[in-house]
Amino acid sequence: MKKSVLFLINGLGIERQGSYSISIDQCMPNLARTKETSFFTTAIINSVEYKSAYESFFLGETYKKEVKYINNGIVNDNIINNPTFISLKNSLSNGNKLHVFLEPTNDLIADSLNELIKKLELNKEQKVFLHLLLTQQTPTEYKKLIDIINYIKYHLDTRITVGFIIGKELISENPTAEDIDMVRKVFFYCSCERWTETEVKLKDLMNSNIRPCIAPGFSATNGCNIEDNDSILFFNTRKSNYDKYIDALYANAPRVFKKDDFKLNLYSLIRLDTKYNITCFAENIIYENSLSNILAKANLKALIVTKNENINYINFLVNGLNHVKSPNVDFVVLDDNNLSNPTYVANLIDGTNYNLIIFDYHMDVSKTVNELKAGLEVIDKALGNVVNTCVNKHSLFITSLYGIKKELPIAPYNDEMVTIDYEMQIPIFFFDYTFPRSKYHLVPGETNDILNTAIRCVWDNKELTTLVKTKGLLTSLLFK
Image (cartoon, rainbow, N blue to C red; front, side, top):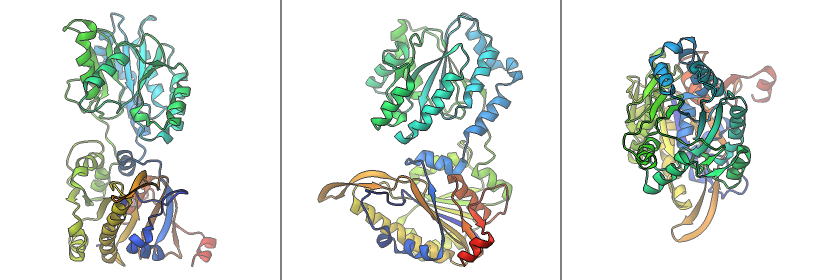
């Protein structure tokens, strides 16, 4: 049975100018050998962070699908009969403020929010504040983020005002006393920097190399503080978790309102991943393009070999942002000793009934350059066993889902700091005896296309994008 094998060496990339050279070809002779016989292309990867890279890999572009679902399944003409909508509208009947928390990941969401506010038919004096929680992981994403926020600001309903903007990960998962004090100042008193021109502040944060997700809170207007009996709506497009902020809200409220019988009316669009009982408009969004759904349609099975600490998150993505177990996907804990054994690797690939096998390695956890080199040598031994098992039988992809850029000392005994910079360009190696290089070539694409291409090699569904393309006549002549 022909199979598709994905060997991910996450953090691997093409050295950028100024990067300290670690001579990957010398550390990884098996990778160097595959370059001579495989197809090769590069992908531009915008992520240097595990979670966002894996979300892109397993789900692709999700936000357009989510906004479409919200427009068709929630904020439509039938919403006025929705019990949650009725409850939200009643909570605002006394003229209290509505605070909408939103992760600005796509500007299309502004239209959905406008439609909801229109349906609520609030009085003219009713105040609605939109508070933005920044989730973007790298400073390079500020440019796109500025465009999104500018679009949202200038396309909002006239009764909606942008309030405070803060990094979603600014406070810890278990808020400290300092975290709680910071939330009180920002959320309850608007005691933070005031930047009407949010673009200027965001550029300042970008120039200071501060990641958006940990950006300190600032306010775009006055009067956006949370008061007793106000309503809070998490305008979330997925099962997000905001418990650390809700914890801080409840910890501060008695002190701010000077009473214990305060009331904060909490709502969400999609049921939150939360310990609190929060009324929602919809339970969840079904991602038809999730790996588990694709495998179920094709009657295929996948095995993912990864570190134990990564299994829960990968499983969450595999199942379309749901904490469930798919009968089509199994996991094996990555063990360097086992994968250095050729017999073990051969049995794992050829001795099982899995159609898709993903090896999930990471080279970005090293603390020194010498440790990084040693780690690459270990990875390369496993790669050699995988290559030898797959040759002339299976499709094999060797690539990465994100690059790394970090400063490291050369060794424990040499504290000279050097920069390893593989941030943007990611190589994709592919070899498969059924696709001769004289007739086919690889083309660049999105991160999710790598996974779809691997699936296409064992299930020819033309709805899945593939990076493997037939050459034109001229291209075939040049690359015979």
